Length: 529
Image (cartoon, rainbow, N blue to C red):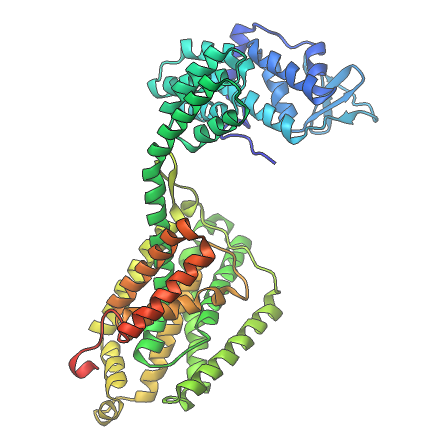
């Protein structure tokens, strides 16, 4: 079902005052019945006449009530229903609703026409953004019957940007004209509107056009629009690749410790991410129930909860299982794979097998409109920044703190570190808990861009291992290059070959790369190796 364009659900007070002052076409009982009852074609024709004739406030209010499914009819009478009471749409008087009054039924086609009519009514409102949204809606759904209204809006509009868009909306409406000359002029004018909506409109008209001259003009305009949209498509692909790379980096940072530094092939790393995502889901539920006024800040509280929860599970995993398996990679792989199955089943038993919904806070909803066909979502921008912050924090922790010194010492020379008084067993637990906690942070971030379910970790674990191996075992800089490189390569190839072949191509490249350079992009040197 189509949604009403922005701002068209409530008519502005300025619009109503405008129509009251003009009052060129007062609503009559006959007009109301024609818009509410009968077949779809007749109702659409009546609606178009009502809007084109500069409707008064009562007509505008009645059209809004039709869009809101708040109208009933019986025979030659119609009522606007509000709070269980019926009101005459012409006089406004409250009258009793007959028990057998029928609801006015709107199919998708009628809802689209009602949305277009409501958008047209916004053309004279005081809010500039509402007028721009109305014009954009009329460009997407042009209606030749509204040409008179568009002409009137052009004569009264003072804002240059809105006026330019009104000209395009008028050209879009003329594209459906019976006059070939008007269609030709409209096709040439629409080349100036280099937006996906105009491109779709021209493609639809191209399939219906029979005049070869007009058809040629439409094709020329489509070529101009396609050239104008190329930059946005290219930048959008790059941004999508960077976004995927930031997600892979978040997932791989935990493995950079548990696998890169400790040498543990942890097949349960994806399930530790899943635990962080479900911890975020629980914090969201607590805020919705007990702190609804602070709901927009639940994600801030969820970050430490996700980290601590996954870190505790990781510490228990290391103390209970992995400390007996150090130096035996095959047994470690099999044990952690079995643990991953146990964790997935535990989550299914607690939360069910279906995905759960985690909402974005309001400050992460929406996006930045850069170009006509390029919008950068806020949630993706936040995750890219968050991945950078986690990377810097992890680099500082490993390279500049006492814990990081101990972790590097134990992983490079365990006997010597033990001789120097380092409690190697405790450091192993701390390091594994740190890697697991970072996996929990990755799960918290992933909950903002996709569904949260028991299989969440399975979608990323293989790619995360590839990032660590390609980047170089234990090398944070290599993980950054590998994550961004694999992310952008995947998205660029998807545009040419499709998602499946792109995945295969990336995997083949990684196999060839590892054969030629098994140490990764950045190899350990000297005493570190």
